[in-house]
Length: 307
Image (cartoon, rainbow, N blue to C red; front, side, top):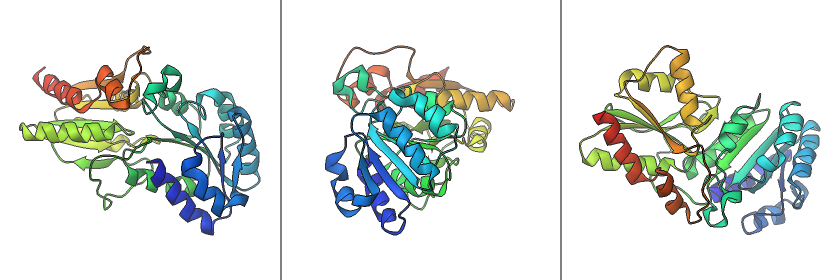
């Protein structure tokens, strides 16, 4: 996903000199080409994420479209006060990019587990929160972020998706993308874990259980119409997120259903419970540990339908 992001940003930077990219002393292997081609549009702020965010705000208020770039929790939780007070309060045209959402950097321990960012940033007024589920969505999100005049957050995975994404299925902020058809159950995912959701759906389909699969790539603004349609038209809703279940995708779906008086026949949230893990391992291992890998999702779906 990160390669798709930087490739598209480079393409757009050629004709749009407003675009600036600021890194927190990370990403050189991926960003080298951008720095070489656009030296006047690139800045290394060093290991100083709070300052990076403040500088980005000032540049944005002078007319630039500024992307801040780092990994894990560094561009978000480490400088949450600056995002709140500087970026969001001033409605600055700053795009915060975190590479390595969820357990992408699982081997580095809980300090690098980005598992609360969607919940926390979703609570900040005026900011778009986007978690693409595929390289295609990551690429399209760059155009959408530049077109959006105001704060935005982009959570990306290090790796690309391992399913075929239909580029004819257009990407628009606030509109879910339907990746699979079905009426027995709706599986909803946000972020890189969508690949596990799609794989779980394909496994269930081979067993005669046909699931609608939605990529809720934008947590804010949120596609309430897609959620309500799923609640009304299918046998239930199962949400999957590589994030805390508190305040993330599952919480957003529950809010929409309750506020509109539409109760799904069945409802279950899969994600990270109210705890941290002291274990380390690759992303696949940690996903299985918390029950959001494809096998766990398929099993949870079957049990939900049997309930």
